[in-house]
Image (cartoon, rainbow, N blue to C red; front, top):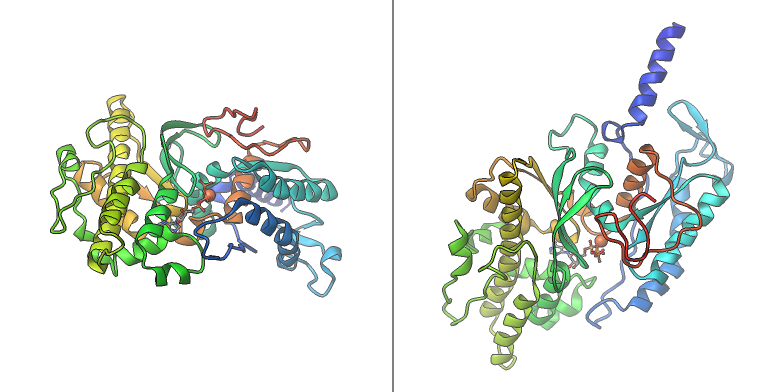
Length: 408
Ligand code: ATP
Ligand code: FE
């Protein structure tokens, strides 16, 4: 019996060291989103103020959700029972270290350092975009190992589409994310938010709960998924280049359609739309606005699909058949993007590529993805020095202009 018990303990430890095969329970994953104040976007000092006002209080709210052996005891006196072992504290604390604005990051980082010091546990400083990329692995861990055949195993291709980034990565391991393409101007989320501000009727714009105008633009452009096929899928490269004018006498060109450069550019979409809208002297009909909204989303997503296919073709020419494309970041929540990328991969001979999106609620920023990246890093043996500072610029391919590398 003692031998059986030892084998059981050994297997359990092994499982703990492989987070992808462990089922994870999310105990608390709340977020506080800045409200739409009608100023058109988020003002950084306002975000900083919100962090200072809310973060410590939110952590306090989370404490009763920690697993406690005796719920009647005050939180500070509770012991946790985990896997039959009594624990008095968490195994580690993980926190976003960069990239982003130093002051804003410092609020979280210093709070995490305080917790790690008080609990005397390791700190893990996480790269925000690495966390977006690993979110589908978290999603599988929540569902339970073996439940979902689409668990993204390294290597895979990652398309990161968020408010501040647009990147195509060859994700080879936890820390190795080779940048294949990034944006030369604005990020896709930012660009679609800008188009939303131009195109959404004032009454919609003033009544949205937050400033994710790209999201509301999509709901305005497509009243239901039945309308998705109104934006055609290019069957080949030639279709990306030629777009006939519609009955209003315009067509929006897909960025960089004429070249095969592995790079993104989105600013041309909003500038084409701005020209059309200003030609109308504020007198754009609802029907035309809807078509402009479809064109903004359609050309942006077509551009994403086009560069992804170029990358897949280039990797295939090198003999690398990438089985999985992970799409993550706030814009990955978009249901038209989910539909459109699948269609585009299918018609352009990549129907075997498995397309993986995180659940919608984990696409935009959330604490769970930072915690999960911490789990993966902790289990792989990484620790971050308590003397670390926030990293304003932090490249995904391991080198930081501010001096940090992933995992250090
Ligand atoms: P980054 O991750 O690059 O630092 P961020 O953290 O501000 O930027 P995210 O929270 O990942 O960005 O994503 C926010 C962006 O996602 C916003 O531009 C928002 O409009 C966009 N977004 C969220 N939901 C949707 C949706 N359903 N359709 C289109 N865009 C969406
Ligand atoms: Fe983000």
